Image 1 (cartoon, rainbow, N blue to C red):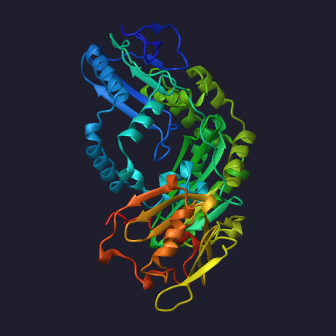
Image 2: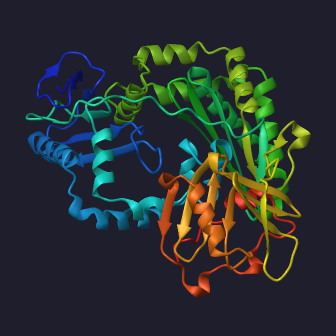
Length: 488
């Protein structure tokens, strides 16, 4: 009869120990001896264009020794990347970017964290063109090390001959989450959509898991007559916090009421009682957590927590903790979600619920030379020694050189400056009365390490004065502008 055991194979060694090590826990589970399911997970803290955790899952209906050969070959390629395929892989990543399906909600990360750290997931990978063999080699050497890689295996046994030879390396700390929102809860508008996307941070633990199920139930009840749908997910954010995602999708008929429905559902959980009728949420959380230790999804979660330095409780401990959750603990988690909430809504206004509008512009302008929009108008570009400011009837948008996240420099003279707070200013000689000498001064003031060089755009794709920010354009539009359609 198959048996379940837990062992550890340390990358770089072929031996196995009786207990998991911090370097690479592997679990053997009772599956067919001809099938090995495994994955390699790395921490995102090495230099990369976007700080996302890389997960590579392999499924092989082969003999275990074949799986070991594949994994050993993968580690060999990580030690010595096949750089002759660099251009091919670059095109693959560009194709993946075009195929992203989170277009309606991808801006949320930038609105919460700006244009650094986790906020980079809102942006296209414009730096792909600047990758060369040296950069890829440095990144690979820093990311794929024995301290920064976890392998999990779900099989009868650890594949014979497994020798994951990787350099020693270090486990670097997670970068801190920048703060770009002056206060929360907050809201912002993405017009032309029929959805609400609310995110918030809560302490990790059983109360957060029960909260997710209770909120799902409350939303289902709140939206029953509208035809809208809701999905609630609770995801690990770091060792201490979980990120709660609420996505509600409706239709134009109910668009204006979607934001209020989400707020009301959250209020029911914040102020309600965890009575007998709500215990089914606990049972659903227990059902989701009551999985054997060799379950592949649980092993995947263990791998992530291992990199975060968070211990994984045993099956019995997980179930007992969920059954012991109190109403006060769930309400506290709901309050944490409310207090940290950022809501993307299709129409303005959650102020009535105590939410504040996310900043729509900058509080001050730089001092510098004014460059009016060509053809006349109320929009002016200011270029100074400290940065650039776009001044229009809608307000100010400023990017200071000291707070610059990146600058995209087109060979045709265009310069797109993105601040760490996510606000952006486009310096376009075809739109503003600005000459090459002023553009050169911007180039001199910007740290060269933050410049992304891009080819000239076709003449018919260059912006025109009519495309300058209009009187009604908000600062959010200045953040969003340029996130799409920039490949032409």
